[in-house]
Figure (spheres, one colour):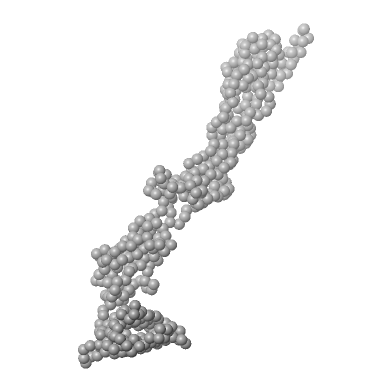
Length: 479
């Protein structure tokens, strides 16, 4: 017996010299040597402690428990991310072994760990003297591994119709908008288009700090989120939702003036008045009419609250007027992108009809096989009243010859282009007396390919009308 006590005392002396603590019994957290794997915000509770005593005289003694975290193994980690709590004492113990259930009340991983995934934390539980006869103590360590599961980032792209930066009821999602995801090193790791309902989701992402952004489309302004208009998302195993983007189409106006270009120079000069009740038409990029309006009393017009698009604005000419502005084709093409467009004016000069003179000849149809041939010489003589002259038309297709027998009027307008109208009566193939009207346009000299000619005899059969552009010949409209 004496020899046995001597050996035990010697062992205690060696252990004390090596550790500085008289570790005279073994202490173990129940569960074996495998790491305890915890996710952020997760805990494991009520673990047991096992102890094996060396000295029988500690039978019935109690030992004070202390606990903590000694280290972690990745850069940027913090031992504060793990918390260990125990009961106050281990015991009263029974010799030679003693187990105490629920001695370790909890091991918790903080909800927002600063550590990287798979970080290892070393925890300890130590039992020290607290009424024990020998001053025995025990120490147990265990590894706790941080596991951050993959998670998702999702959101919605919506049309912020009222421009208030909030997704209100009834505001629809927007499909086919590009959403980009960057990781903590600012590298692009994903792009996707929003779905039909405007939603998007990036799935199974590892823990990291991400940036989510959208690609704006022309004519749209972002209303949500706040500047800089991106989302910074710290992902740590928990899905992040509601990373929405709101956009609004800035509406804009198109306006202009309809004016009386009295001098016909294509410029709105001082003193030239606006013209009321002229029809202005607006078409969108698909050539569909989206609005018509009459100019106001001062000649102005405005199409308001228009979304971005390419628009065409035109006027409806009134009889007796010639357009002088804008240039041919006499319409405005406006690319609207959230900024008001003004000055889309239309200038017109009134055609002053006078007694004048129209002369000329020409062919309609192919030169080698013309469809019609005409000759005009109509005027008001200076020495007597009443119009005079002749009009003769040969229609080769219908075998008709039309000859004037009486000219009743010759009126001309010297605008740009010059125009003339001749009225009277004529025979057809030498018979009858039919009222006719001839309209000509003197667009260029020579007139081939530019001047036009038309003749109508409403009383002949069911009505006769023929017109066309000269393939040969020339028309002269003279004051």
